[in-house]
Length: 205
Image: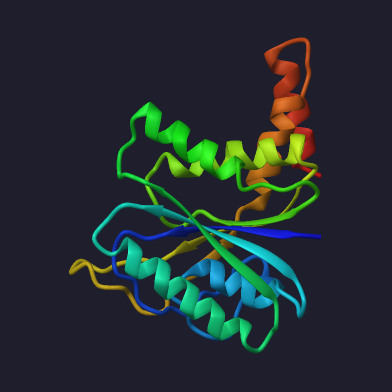
């Protein structure tokens, strides 16, 4: 099964961090990385995997350098794994206009393949990129029979001097949010109160 990875590339410089996971220890990588997606891939890629890694780049001063560093960091990790990784790039200006948002969506879905397994990182990029990725993954699941494996978000806290606070890097597995959105999209109920009751019962399981 083809593995497709959507990696959001930052517009600012980033420093290596050791990301811990509070809920999913299976994705917690023992070493430090600049890019949370690389921590996830270090734990999930296997020898011989066929991987298409899509770098989602938003134009900025450091964007090209960060795309290069993300590849170099993952290539170093992969040297011990042996997956076959093809890198492709999606680029868009740092704007939130409808034409740019729609272009990002179109570029993302055009990188999909039938029956693929998808990994995604929502750490970096403009605010609209998160819903665009969610919409694209929903499109992938519905029309490409894609398996949405993991969606991650890396959090780092900063002190009052805008310096990275020690031991604050956390890797969150937010895949459940995608499936919650899928659930609410297909739910049916005769009225709002019944819908809330059914949703609360499901979340309590």
